[in-house]
Length: 334
Image (cartoon, rainbow, N blue to C red):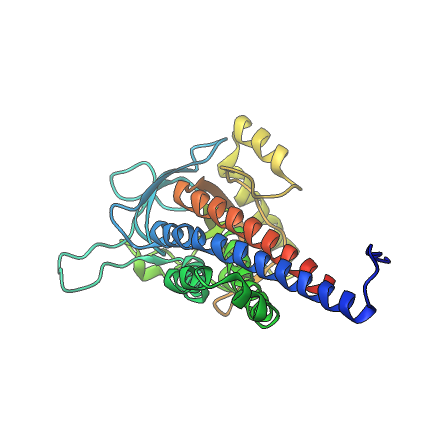
């Protein structure tokens, strides 16, 4: 693009004026972005508050949609499940004495000096760490206001150097916020079955060896998964495999459950508030032993606090990305 000025000026004067105009525009953009950072701190602090281990926490209802496989609740405080009370009905899982279901609850201790057992949610710890990191990267309110109070000529003189520092800071803050959001969307494979499952001793009574329990975060929801396990049958043992198949179907000879299983068979075992009754083919190695999943129950419970954190982080990310784009355009044009 060619710039013509009338009346005509010397080329060196024109170049100097163009550079000064670009510096003034850059100083103005920096000032606007820095002012926007003032509103970023309260948003991040609110996210930290929602993730903090404060009582009474979030109590979420658990319920399978197509069966009575799982009913109950879990209570999350900070980055841990501190209380559970679930009624589980899975074929082959013995009922708790005096009840028509297996009762699954965390162990409690009467000793106030001993920490009550809880199910850790390491994803939320990581999420909180990333939010805290983004907060520490923000310039202080005093420094922003002090820079804004400088004469515009002084801000223009240091605009190029300031823009490089600000661009680096925006990259770092955006990286932390995006990492925090990504953590709330999915669970790392290392925290999933069969690599990981809740410790049996956390529950009262301790979990039987045939039951694996997972509580994770997926799509901003608390996901509770229960798997009833059985020993994997060697491929060559046809008779044993045949009898195992019969044993697994006889207890569930119920028309309603067979229809529910037919709709889910071959499809994705998840889904919002999904039920159980699925037999997964193939063996997996769980705690050093090859097993097969005889039955699986998966329930998603939306957590309002985590949904709020996700929405707030999304808005902050959008605003920061817009500022980063504007700064990049002006820096390149200068």
